[in-house]
Length: 231
Image (tube, rainbow, N blue to C red):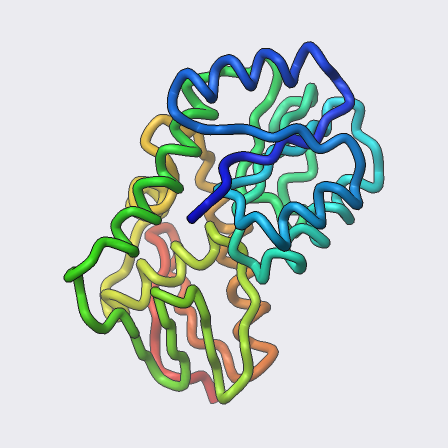
């Protein structure tokens, strides 16, 4: 069972605002005021998601996102709250699933969390899909355990990247447009640029290519599919 949402911030007013909004929608929250507390809670409490206050743009926050990913075994989605516009913020930073810029839109945050909760509910519902393992070439995805294996090696992906690869694995021969991938893998109300899809596909490609040749096929001006192993 997931404990709820961990919020990492030193801004008491921001925490109280987020607490009011999220608990009214059924998301219990917990404040973490230092990194060690946050990482320990990530390891032991199985949070639904982690919200990181990046509004003061401290350099160590990108490193913290990577450590959260490692502490959770790549299973906990991370949202960054920032004062910077999306184009100014480092959206290519590893470990960040979504960026919510100021002024914060509660609908976007709630859509992000609802998407996570819906996916978890579908995956854990008794009697649905006794086997949720997808295979293509030398890649295996185990949905219940949220694991990707290639040539016997664990491939570490963020929660969002796992969803993107899963969408490709379900229909590997189909060319999926960026709009299709956004609709399938992001919350319905999220505002996502096509370039963001390219960034995450790039992360997936690099992670997979550590253990084998390139298997993601880029169709220029259309989208992405899975193909045969590159020689």
